[in-house]
Amino acid sequence: MIATNKAKTLITGGAGFIGSHLVDALMTQVTNVHVFDNLSSGKLQNIKRWLNNPDFKFTHADILNQGSVCNAIENCFTVFHLAANPEARVG
Image (cartoon, rainbow, N blue to C red):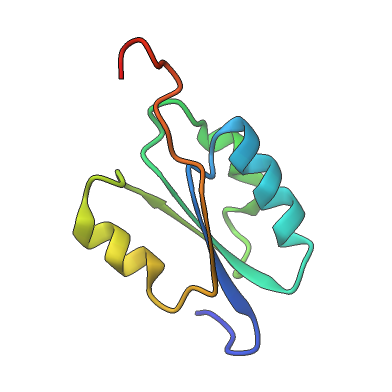
């Protein structure tokens, strides 16, 4: 459950290298962090230390799923969109 006095922040691609460092920084703030990642290039290991924290939520889903994105973004104060295909030649 998210406390009402804490702002909710969504990070797409939050299990990636840059996203996970942003998670680390934000989790030291007064905020709830919701990571949305399909783990195609990100790693759960990058955010493992936060998985049992009540101010942290992880959703394993793809940003191409509009319903999942709408659910994740609900009541967000801030969104960091870091989800991307790291292999530009394939994407």
